[in-house]
Image (cartoon, rainbow over all chains, first blue to last red; front, side, top):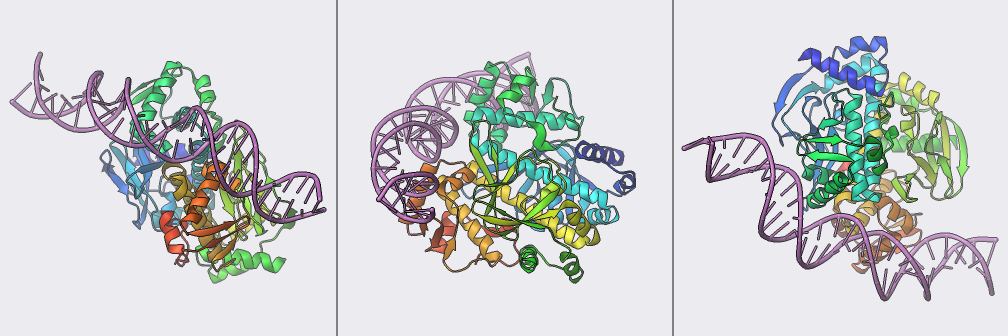
Length: 244
Length: 244
DNA sequence: CGTGTTATTGACCAACATCAAACTTAGTGG
DNA sequence: CCACTAAGTTTGATGTTGGTCAATAACACG
């Protein structure tokens, strides 16, 4: 698994920046305990003060928060190579939770290991800082979607985002994408009801943009889907424009 | 003005963390050109590649993005001491704009000055990193609001947030706060229409929680306002709980 | 004292939520 | 191989929040 970890992490970092030669050695210092999580299992919980960050090795993970009304807001999705809670390195108390959406494997990287890497190699530190800034850029884009776009545009947009990120990490290509999330997950991410998501996906299918099956989507017309989603991948700040 | 800059910046950093003695010297390296901006004037524009960051000295500033439909989404408000575009240090192309809401003064700090500070004093770098992470935490909280809270709760929430941040920077206290933003600004920040904001603020007043006048609000019942806004300041990750 | 900006009010409407029931699919055990 | 179950999706009926449009009112400023 150790090889996989560094391979995934390298791929992730290369998708958002350049790894200087000196940083490659530092990168190999990254290690931690590997743990398996079941579908819907919490990985880190709101209010906790973890002493480690986690990196996704396999599966599909989300950050979310439960509101007093009992509703859930999902704030991001994460793919293999991502470090969803890198922020806990400097924000000691979690202000949201992290959970697996499907059975997933993650490495638990102690904070002191991360800090050691960041101190030994500032270039790598800056790349990680950049990663958290991209994280924030995605939050801003979601805010825009939830605040000002219709359900139809919003759903097309978030699907475009996930697809582009999968491609950038070279996890999947081709028109068919394994997307292990339910319509209720999409609803909770976009501030909609599952019912309305169902209807709207139906509409996207009716317009011939994509085909939805539980567990996967097939893109039929990529250009028109991007257009429908008002999607410009610039906010993802990826290296090459993998969005072509 | 130079004194003010360092004083404001120190206050800001002290509100979110601890400045180690070694960092104090580094802090004094911070400098740049001071510029005045009129109300509604853009400071940095979407798509630009600035070679500097900006710090607010006086006034009130927001980050926003215009959508293809001509609507505006405001993504954050910023007070004196804030560096709203610190991210441009590592994300070279702006994915949104920065504008003054009222006549404001900002320092333009060249990126190489910031990088120099960060390299000489990693502790200060980490504190700045922490600042961008808090930024992201605020975005998440706004996402939750826009996605899952009613207009009434949302407005109360954002008012609480601004008040707590003003108090933390010791810019204002007492029950009356100078808040130089219009109801249209609030609407664009929360994904509402100005009409509905007007009605809802009226409702908040009717319930005796606050008094709104263009340019200022007076808090009549702080505890009840926090409750109405489902407000827990923890996500601001401030040092002392200034929210009491 | 006009003039522009911001706030308020009313009438009407659309997007989306909620509730409830039916349907589809995959997995499980007999 | 066939019930049986559980999770997820679909559909219909109905309700509500908040949007849009348009007119009026309240200020602030020169």
